[in-house]
Amino acid sequence: TFGAGVTAQLGAMRTNEEIDALEAMAIRPISFLVSTRLIAGMVAITPLYSVAVILSFVASRYTTVVLLGQSGGLYDHYFATFLSPIDLLWSFAQAVLMAVAILLIHTYFGYNTTGGPAGVGVATGDAVRTSLVVVVSVTLIVSLAVYGSEGNFNLAG
Image: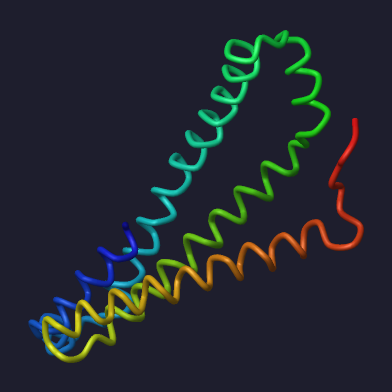
């Protein structure tokens, strides 16, 4: 994954003293190494998420109309009934927040790696486990904040 790669790359840079070399050249390593990876993540998540959403809509329509034999009009009716455009915006915001959380966690663990090459593997594993817990927590918090007690969640048409 992108996050594990970031952790391994920064951990290897720490182990090989490349980060210390940046500090010796008076280059702030956090802004130089972390901010570029965060920006790259934001640039990558936008088209990836957009394509994934469009493909999921196409796949659900194909499954409903072609494989299950329902009419296209029926699919369109329920699609428009249950999918609010604001929900798409909230899902995009949630995806961006998850990407930021994952990248911050992985850059932190990679930047603070100790213990040589074995430490890089340990840091990568710790970062992956931590980011899994944080992603679930971010999903829960965003869902509660958006839909909470008065959300526009529809169960019937």
